[in-house]
Amino acid sequence: MTRRVLIFGTFDGYDAGHQFVVSEASKKGTELIVAVARDAHVQHLKQKDPKWNEIERMNRVKQDPLVTSVVLSDQNLGSYQILDEQKPDVIVLGFDQSALKSDLVRWMHEQNRNIPIEILDYLPE
Image (tube, rainbow, N blue to C red; front, side, top):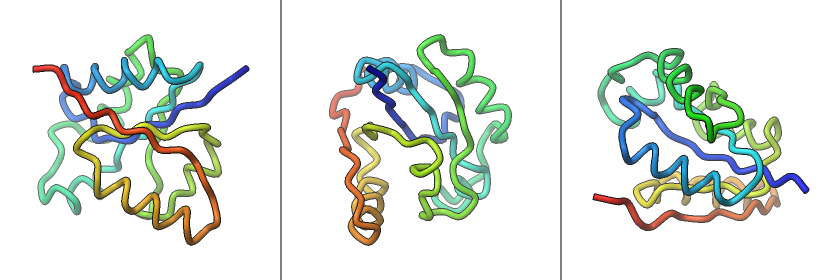
């Protein structure tokens, strides 16, 4: 039985923290879908340009053998069309993605949807 896991992130630099999140999220299902933040979203949310553009970041994530597919996040921040397109069974978030979790919970409440969210609360040193 297929269990689709969706994670979100900027993935700028693809460091040990990114690898940890991908590794842990991949253990929670049979398919791992990675949504890479758009450049405009990074600029808006982090108040800086990403080091690598969205296509370069996508291509780096695609190299990870644990990743099933890589997509760009929604064009409009907070619209969560990606959830209808990718149909995840679970969303896995990093310990530092509490604002995203709150927004997802808000959206699911408004849409009368319920996709389980799991938080990874540990990041190796």
